[in-house]
Length: 321
Image (cartoon, rainbow, N blue to C red; front, top):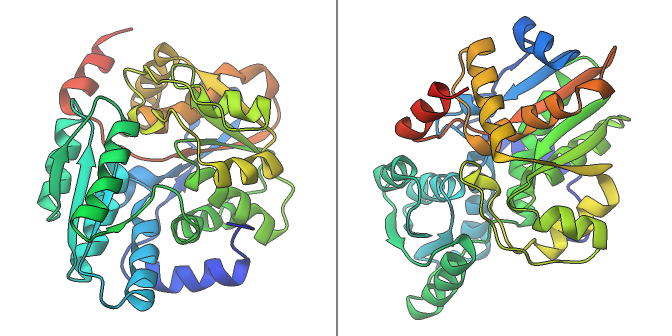
């Protein structure tokens, strides 16, 4: 992707997306503000019908695919869950077969959700990268279109939510966005630039999946294995080079948060808002809490990218302190 989507491109995507997916709310919760030490606005992507932000990207990508490749009979992707749900949801709307590859030990409830949306689920490998390589091989052997986790159409779809957020909150000094392979943070940069705002954008990654942080510092792709136990949506060992180029241009910095900080943020979100937040989503709030001293008197934003956490995992997190 040579550039981020324009306002016209985002608005065109919105016309497609909002006919299917309702807008999600953005709230400033008094108890959460007290924890954060600032006026904190959160975008509730855990309120989409699939429980995560990626659904819009799948809709835009699949619409474009059907126009560019009308003979396509099916698609394949690798995922830890939310991207796969988005692909399965959009594929079913277009009557396409969807094959989704996940690593062994993936979230049982995310796996069940993808199957419920009509996907054929394949477990392969011990991490996302192994699942991705298998998905690419299946695309060739089964004549399926391989949908990446980062692509211009995905960013355009996700930007529909990002621009909605920035349009409907007071001006933000800084917004924190979790980074998996980059569609969310690139969408936020596109929305900020489309609206002509001065909002600073800070990326958030897991300290146990630091490839994007190390790549940001080195200004080139650095591969680093992931070992996070809770933020599976951030468990990426190999950053996308196109996403990294955009992140280097438009992101102020990247904050790393530990699994303990993420789990504490999940508890804080639940006690303050009674919302269920998955680990990758809570990373944005974890970063805000980590940098609490920077925010006095400021208005801050955080994207809660999803709420798809397994029941047993969430029960464990809530039971700890």
